[in-house]
Length: 573
Image (cartoon, rainbow, N blue to C red; front, side, top):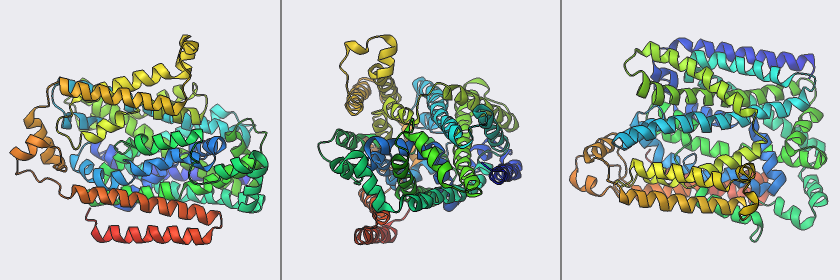
């Protein structure tokens, strides 16, 4: 890092703080303004903010680790979510209902959907579990990525001091301006992050000599047969990863939009903007953003085969290829990726703390000003918890896999609760408890720590996932039928607000025809499936273009374009 590089980084940090502080007066008017921007985002701002929050500094490191282990098919860890709440399922089925719910957090949705004291307990638990615990793990692996990069890019700088400075800048504008400032900085961070990602891919292309040299390098490194598998877009039948792929495509994607995406959906100005923003996110994040990172990851594996880890190899690629000035821009883009994700997670983590714990159970009748101040304090607490977690994480990729396992099967019940009146809070409690307990019991690290690893069968990740899903699904279904359904009046109030599809709402649909039920469930499912095919066609059209397969690319992009045209002709979000 030269003096010019540091000046670019410093200028970016100061600009981010100034932009965030500009919006502070607007954000501090109420909790609604602080956490969901007064529900006034246009679709393009909500969509760009979704993409920026999802592109974290750990993303290229995680992609590099996945490519190192399983080649390009390893990225199906992310691509499978095109089908889910973060993708076309969210765009065509969930976004409108979430926006109509007028909630602040998904934990608040619990007491909107379910009745009784068990719903209050579940809301408080989810506020702690997802808002603090799971969120802190996510933030922890993002903070760890800063250390990984700093070891190579700025080896003479104390990594803890560097992280402290970045967090102070992020905390200032996040605590002062809430989601208003986050969205404004996200827009700039999206532009800078995209430029940095493409710059590195461009220099990696020039360094390696094009994609043909990548193919040659992989062939020399892995052998012809293994290289062909690693460079394909789909996993090969019969390989160990193929089972993982099947698990991802059938079971892993189930779930509502993740909290960061949900927050932008809720902050959108109406149902149409919420749906369009989610679709924009699916196309850009899944169909476009990963390819520059994939290419840089492949080049780093060839160029630095002796690196201590794939993540370190990626960092070495950054420092080796980029000249002074562009290195500073790249570091600014990585910091943009870092800050755009950290600000989102500490803000929505604080929203759970205040909305679902503090205001719901501790201080119920204070002023809006009091709760806004509590939100600012909670933002600081959330960040401190995440820093503590970061010091106890081994690797980014391991954390990704752990988080995907701990709620295996739970996503199914939180999808079905929108469509089936019989699901109750006890069923969701059972799903959370059994998935968390079973996944932890089968975890190699947990088993080794408690000394029973040698006494149980050593099962691969994908088979452990299937076991957890099976146990979880059976448990919540049994509990559901053994417990009383929710109060009918409560279910009616829920349906009146969110206007779900009438399918499987049984007695509520028959007895309350005045409810404005959402029509066209079959059409929405067709849009979901067609949209997913369109996003995948666009994604692999871009990948084919990167591999200079122009005919294949043109065909896939044409399919994507035709599907997109048909969707917008028949879709009425």
